[in-house]
Picture 1 (cartoon, helix red, strand yellow):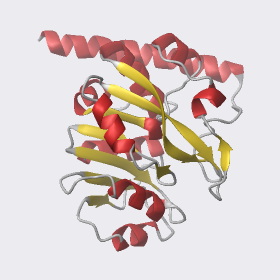
Picture 2 (cartoon, one colour):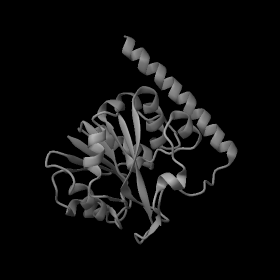
Picture 3 (tube, helix red, strand yellow):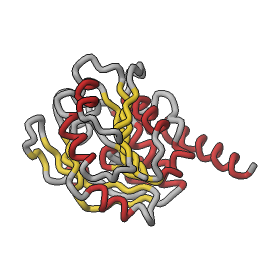
Length: 240
């Protein structure tokens, strides 16, 4: 069983197109788990209008954060394989099939993607090339290449990734770095998502960072400490 987890908030403009691109690739036994962070637009009505029993919607949350909104979706998911999704992208037709095959021998798989703008025009043909993405813990600790909407993983990695620590910068780098330590991570060259960048995006991924060098150093040191603490607690629980 596959679970697609989506944190939604005021996503009415694009979420129907995204859901259609996802649902056409899933079997009747799969699910799309949406955690909505108290949207004030028509997001809820649009999701319900899809009228597909594979869509599991959890409303009226007040996380005020895409990180912990996603965490809620993950906690409600039931699939053996979990795909992360944004509310405003479009999946390429064979995304699920390709990533599912790689997940048979890997714990976490990250694909490349095509960057598009608000009007679906191509900004860049490859996120990997634009971001200089590379595999490996050190490479991604220095320069994050883990892009949440391009991730899929085996359910077992939730055992050491959840709960998310408080006040982390983003969930994708947390999942990626943790899994590098505990499991097997694979970057694939296939471009499987049309990754939309527009004025309402939460994160500045693929754009020049506005954060100072001091902030970047501080949050990476914090990540290193948190990852070390999670590693020790995970191994302690295994030894008991």
